[in-house]
Image 1 (cartoon, one colour):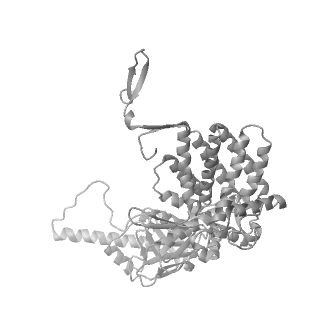
Image 2 (cartoon, rainbow, N blue to C red):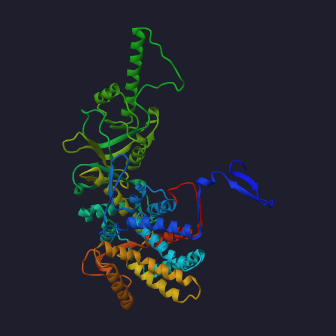
Image 3 (spheres, rainbow, N blue to C red):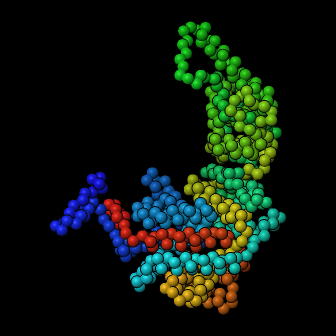
Length: 541
């Protein structure tokens, strides 16, 4: 007990506990705790609300080392923010879980969670118990998800007609920095997914898609390579820059004489001993190169390095080689070329060689930067997206944008139901939840109406970020949705003159919308159930 505190007795003999360091600890209970949590969550939501939608603004983060990140991707913004409050950290994790599960909608889910907690605060002020609010939100989420199923449409995946898939990817990329070459990026993402997708199993293996970036050139130079790009060059500058009909030996053993595994010492006492040692090394190098050549290989890719002597010998024997290729890249090359990773030279056989139509070295501008491209591989399912950009920041943002687009198309391959974007499904669900609330006689009806109002925070933010009058625009769209019974009407963010999102080709996956609602409600319920906080951290309070 002494570690935590001590027991004392009052004048009537009743025991009470004196907790250690009680003077330095703080405590929040009841409505104070709820208010503190809700304020922290609202603050985080308000930070990224302005980044929502195609006209959303970017945020610039500078880390302690002075590196700059400019992005409007919700998960990236929150990940790089220096957050101390524990509830605010939960909001960061919420956006991260949406990113891990779906890959898109990371900003929307935080804005929705912030709005749910903001409306919950008003209900708490009216004296409604947090558990009743949680139950009402849970009921409303079920109604909203059921309504999404009714307004969702089935998306036909046709490999001959990629246009609908490209429109879907363009919706995701609309808010990103890459919208200058909007369609090109969308086409690259669609082609990459369709190259590796297993449509029978409805699955996409992301391990087969590698995203590589290189500073220099312009974003329009971004390309999809049906093969693998490795950020390495040939080990000797005089080796050929192009190898056609390559038979690749993929090695994880170094080009050097074998050493005993135990600690050892080698004494060289005379010139003769030194010559014998040198002769032994030469013979070993010769044997290694001979074993590779005898297997029929005309290109070596090695995970480890080799010294200048081995390098010179490889050049003499006309055996191009690449050294220091990392583990993940070695695995991807093995998958793409159909080769086997060989741990010992003795095990190298013709059957274990990878095959590629062409391996060539790319040069960039006036710099000495070089990269290897392995194309026309035996397994054409492995692809690389090669992103170019004017500076490191643009290349990194390009990678994040492509990742979002890849995730959205992957979700569609898994579940081919869609809804139309622009805040249309949120407005439609809001109307459906408000109608359902009228049929409920218990206290939960107030929470359900608050849920319906919270859903409108997404279209309100979209309208505000597009420079429109948020309340007027939302009221007009909502009344038209009810009057025309058309759940496709949303906010015309790009001022195209039509509010029908089907005409504008603004498409989102149904799984993304459902995940947003369910994740936001789960977090809100969890925060509302916390009514007592103890801690010594002054920043938290």
